[in-house]
Amino acid sequence: MMRDEEEVRAASGRFYEALTQLCRGDPAAMEDAWHHTVGVSTVHPFGEWSYGWEQVWATWQEIAQNARDGTVIGRHIEVSVHGTIAYTTGVEEVSVSYGKTVARWSANVTNVFSKTGGEWKMIHHHSDKAPAAEEAVEKLAES
Image 1 (cartoon, rainbow, N blue to C red):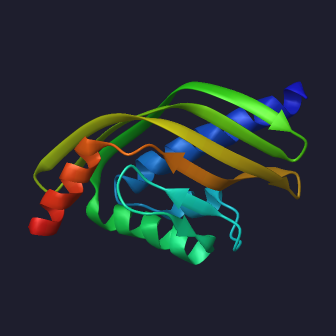
Image 2 (tube, rainbow, N blue to C red):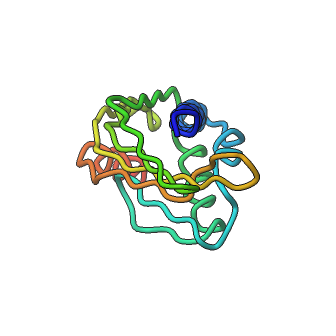
């Protein structure tokens, strides 16, 4: 069980590294962090729910196209493993530039991972709504 917990913690770390790369315009690592199935889902601190890999991937690509100079850090990450499913809870601390607008926010987050083929990958990402994130996206849409 401890090995699985360590592997999930490592998968979570890879996700946050991928999220930082994504917020600097590079979505490649994010694509690798996820299972590519119809059963995946996400909701960001702005926007609506996305279901299935095509919709989920489209949201990450949109963020990568618009965000620059970003960092996302996962803090206070707690891991819970249940067989081949695991989840983490914690806080995301985000700093990202959208054009000339710099936005910073913190949001509670839950991530769900599934172990397939010996590898833990994301199947669900939920980040609480964040007014600062929504304001930055609105300003971006106006420009």
